[in-house]
Image 1 (cartoon, helix red, strand yellow):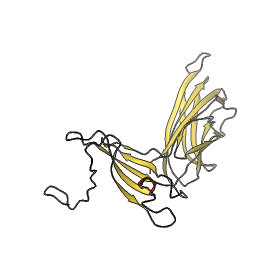
Image 2 (cartoon, rainbow, N blue to C red):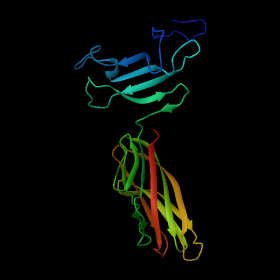
Image 3 (cartoon, helix red, strand yellow):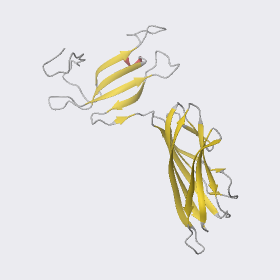
Length: 238
């Protein structure tokens, strides 16, 4: 239909119900095929390989007309008789969430001490604090599930007992040095107690599916009297 104030011809899916409440589906655009079985409508709207749904965000009425948009897809090798997965939601306030967007947070589970200088050494990770979308940790390596651009933020908490000229943090890709922040400096405040520093930075990396990245540290000084704990988070941006 089209009206005086419309943007042009419009397809309207109208729920014919005077008791629509929060969570009720207002309408669905479904996309499917006739290969294999079951076929639609035996294959339910929830089981179609891709769909877009409008969902009531409140109990509907003359002054209550809020709605969300939900986008569903199925992964490779999914059966026709299983439900698709919610992968993006535009909420009534305009916020966009992607519950399966790859992301990870990992950290050290113990203190790491450097025993040599001017040698790049993997910064140890022992705990996966958060992981979704198949961005995973194995040892000190983070493996990405899909090709795209990824952001990695790191924080290295250091206890130092003497001045250090420079501490470098490097991002390795598939075992080879890829990007580097080489010159974090730190000054000891004196006395026998440690001085605490936190070295932070961000890497932006173009990665292919199944690539892995690793944080390395390198100490440009003659002292080994320094220890660390590391945290890194990463996520796909597109």
